[in-house]
Length: 198
Image 1 (cartoon, rainbow, N blue to C red):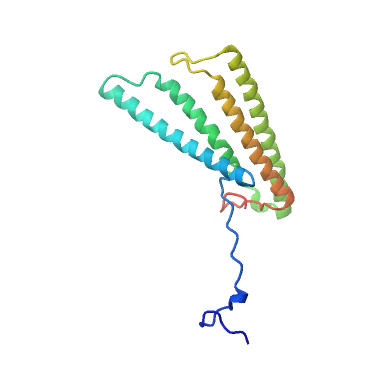
Image 2 (cartoon, rainbow, N blue to C red):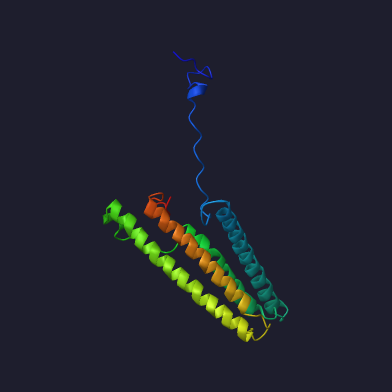
């Protein structure tokens, strides 16, 4: 009879269960340190931009109401900040499968069908994101070639539209990783209660 390792009737030290593997971070765009790093950077950028929008709005409204002197060009700055916020968060939302979905019929579908349904739907999403990235890249090339700028602050459009194209491409990569996870069986079909795959 094996002696207990802690004297309290517990499991012997030789039979100690292996520590469970920590779950992957939900903001990891794709496997590996690069995916985790990219997710952290995008999350930080999105949070920073959101905070900047909040500060700009507060200062602009305060200046307009109290001092009759709003921030010059605040509308244009807000437009670019909003675009940066949306596209920097797009890969994170895609990696978390956080897009809006309709699951009215999901409870009636067999498990095997639901899995391949996710493969088809996510493949379509990947193609759509890749198309958006391609069109934004073409648009950014046009903006750069014509030196298009805003009317008030003369902010160039090209760098922002190119950044948005890269973010859409990252979202397409994250979506493609999800497709492979479902095809290989490494990813489980998400449920309505959890709202994301695992």
